[in-house]
Amino acid sequence: MKKIAILFLLCFFTTLTNYSPAFAEQKAYYAKVQNTGVYLCSTPSENASLFEIPYSYFVKVEHSVDDYFKVTYNGVEGYVKKDKVTLMDGTPEVPYAKATFKIFVPYYLYQSPSQNSSVVPVNTNTTFTYFGSKAGEQVSSTSNLWYYASTIVDGTTHYGYVYSGVTDYLSAIAPNQETFKVISESDMNSTPNSELKHLSTGTKVMLIVAISIPCVLILYFLIKPTKIIQITKGRKQIKKERKRIRHGDYFEFDESDL
Image (cartoon, rainbow, N blue to C red; front, side, top):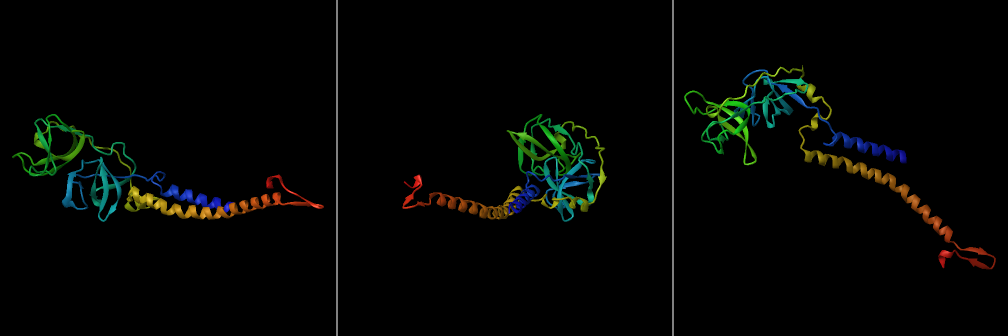
């Protein structure tokens, strides 16, 4: 009986280890942008492009959505067309381009590459983190290029677009020379536990609870009969000790009965 209980206990902890977000180590996959004109989109549609991802850098792949990969680029979530990037088996040291710029006049951070969108006022010499570029409203006769960027205003990080014409020097973006073994989507999907990558933490916790409760109940009912037998034996022993013992014409009582 004890061996069976130990077996179920091992089963329980093995299951917990495999499915718990705290224990399960999911392998990260990256896809390299090896051509220009590759856009990160807010939804799985090329009509919802946010910005052109800098050439030669990487996106971190989460899972597949039809013809797209759900990805993150330097903390920005989105989608990229599968046929526009190359899946690789490796973790780049510098997956995202590191570039910044400043504005030389008081300006705004726009929600879209257009001066008709909502804005966040930004002061002169504010530093922006650059993510990528996108063609938008023709603000001047020379350019319609906008930068997708983020900056901190009053302690809060804001994301949006800045017209390139009001910026100073954009720090140079050197090509990323890192490369790894090219793999297929089936290789990525065959990784153990890869089907759990797209689950939220709340869903994973519920899955753990659903698996854990039956194991605990089985373990409890396996151990309970043994404890009942032990308690019963103990009670019988106490009764036996308290039993009156007859000696000739008188009875002798245990002192505990007095």
